[in-house]
Image (tube, rainbow, N blue to C red; front, top):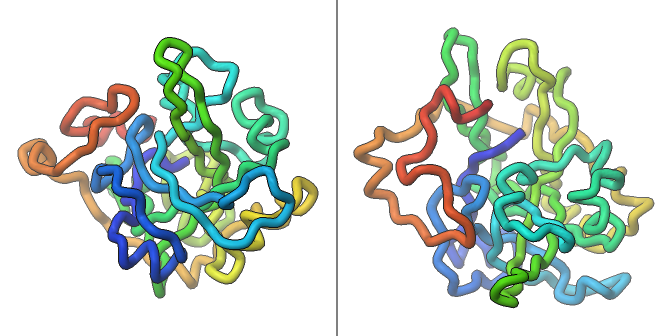
Amino acid sequence: MCSNYKPVTLRDRLLAHFGVVRPDTETPTESWPGYNAPFIVRPDDKAKLSSGRKALVGQYGLVPEWSKDLMLGRKTYNSRSETAAEKPSFREAWRKRRWCIVPAEELYEPNYESGVPVRWAVRRIGGPIGVAGLWGMWLDPKTGERVPTFTMLTVNADDHVLYRRLHKPGDEKRMPVILRPEDLDAWLNCSVDQAMSFMKQYPPELLDAEPFPLPSRKAAAKVPRAKPHSPPPETNGPETGDLFE
């Protein structure tokens, strides 16, 4: 699982590494379920093959069209790739090939080797991370506002050299589906039948990780945050012990 990450928000980074122009919408420096962050889609999501990419800003946590509550996204920020085609919250996006890329500078995961949860930062060596995801457009039944939302796809990582060290002891190890830079367009344009071929672990030798504790409450209060579509976790972020439940 990945409930917390640092999005790629700098215009030059998004353009250089993902070939997209950053929307003007303000976004937080770190993303949690319910926060706004940039993600990347095909310019025409109805076309079988679409050239180019487009950046949107939406809520981290996919909300299906049938849901009446945007708060559902607090539970749907990750989607197990093995069951995404079947689960009610994700199957429509999967069936409609609403593939997306979530650009991240760092993914934050807990390490318990010291006996207490310590936040670690996972980075891709050589550049930012592109995570495979699903997205949708949720219609607010009260206001008529159309709200983009997205989720990260994950795979089992019990045998991954790095990710098996993360998350609670005894829990299944999961990791986001990190795409190779050369596979970004192939993922966005793949068929439903081809999608599972991208659902695999990223080579551990191409990743780096180190302890990266949460900032103190006083420091966190100074971090600029954008107003999300739904109320975020408390302003200073959850306590470390509650962060990865």
